[in-house]
Length: 301
Image (tube, rainbow, N blue to C red; front, side, top):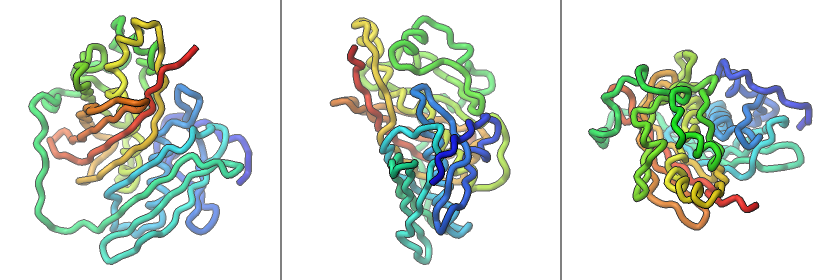
């Protein structure tokens, strides 16, 4: 792998960020990078690119159904990532892949297992959207980060490093601002609408990879917010980083149309916090589920 500095993504077209260059049989290389607040590659980029790499080795009639993802190390934005895809299964209906992401020097940054399957007619059901999930709200009329200027927002920025600043590529709206600022400490919950700002081509594989990208944005906040008041009282801070992530694709979706994440955090302990999310389209279809475990550690000094 060459060590030429990688250009920063301009945030305009998600297809540019997710596009990969073939560098060998079942090997693909990233072309640009997006940094997060810790000066590491944004986790959504790793998720989306890993899924795209796996997809490039599978027949087009088998969409992704599941991805289990390990964030092994923080990706360095100035270095390209090589994704090596191993074929685990190619059956009549199912295909499975392993995708390992690495940077120069053999530094492993991610490892993913991805399953694909041919759709077919079968019995169907879904958990109905909770009445209080915010599905009835009009996301275009709801506040985004620029409109949330409460004092609690500044405390969150100081304590967690989450910044209430609009993202160039992601449109985020809050049906319940109190989820962000004044959570239920017994079981923190966060509900939000999210979509890509720019429209995407009608390519289901691209939308799945773009959803994987979106699924890392603020999801673990539900596992962190309950601990902000005690950290503020102690004049302390918390370090938050993604550890493990999983996605189940239940039904076709579009990442450039509004999606509602209804997330709860059932547990936080021993330096880790868990968030579980159900994802609905505006029509009320449950299109995906996502979970994330994050590092939740006091910053000493």
